[in-house]
Image (cartoon, protein in one colour):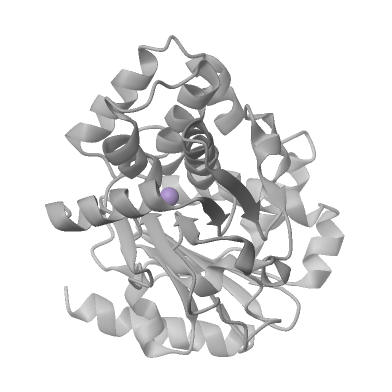
Amino acid sequence: MPMQNKEIQNALKRIESAEKILILISSPDGDSIGTSIVLKHLLESKQKYVSLYSNKPINNSLKRLPLIEEIEITNVVKLDFYNYDLLITIDTANLEQLYNYNIYKNFKFPDNLDILYIDHHFSNTNFGKYKLYEQVSSTAEVLFKYLIENKYDLSLDEAELLYYAIAYDTGFFRWQLNPYTFHAASELLKKELDYDKLSNIYFENIDDKFANILDILVKRTKFHKKLKYTSLYIDEKLIKKMNIDRENLKNYLDTYRANFLMNLTNYDISVIIREAKGFNIISFRGKSYTNKINLTEINKYSDFKGGGHKNACSFSSEKNYKEILQEINTALKDLKSKV
Ligand SMILES: [Mn+2]
């Protein structure tokens, strides 16, 4: 749904009036990284004091992006919020994603700190007083539409970051597309950016260890034929056995998904359940052509915390693997019976 003109004007005015701005991203991916760094530069060009933090580390392949050093990794709950008069969250569906919720369950952002969110997540909980929000390809597309196009002259590095952000969230222009997505990409390409380099950063993200790891992941995949989904459970023991650092595990899993699960006929959903410290991370992907249910609705059947998009979302739960799988079965059975 497009935003109302008044909401847009309110958000833009609030950004104009802010002096000290804190930008937070929930998990550093291509979209949140590109959008947040470009926003930081844009605000600095207006003589504002800006800090940009992520609570989570940046994985190695994304460290190849330009200007990546602009994002500082910190424990968000320890920040001195009274230094700022506006918090802008980027690519974040709810406030709990911005800090380590599983450790700091009682943490709250100060009530007197205005929050403005720039986002595109279906599951956004509308947590800010101000917003720039549309359910489009990426947060970068929202930023481009309201704050960049005809308003801010991008440097080459900035254009590359935004192009990468849109490409990243659309699987290099395969899903979540609308005509404006290509308009924005086309405007960015006019900067003669190095799209081969950016595509290489996206696709070349595994090393020769992967042959062995892929073998393990494929063999451990469970096929739930009736409900047409696959599941994979990764516990601490398996992570040790695969001998991968946690930071790069995500890359391996993305590649396993992109090159095995997404090519599998007769299965339209995949779930990866990963053991973390005292809880499990449950991550869903659906094929946009064949999956007809909204995967973010799965948490209605359980205590899963989190969200995302119709075909890509993740949750956390303190339940064990078997209980989680049972709840997924119940949820998918019901959701699939309704479409
Ligand atoms: Mn995004």
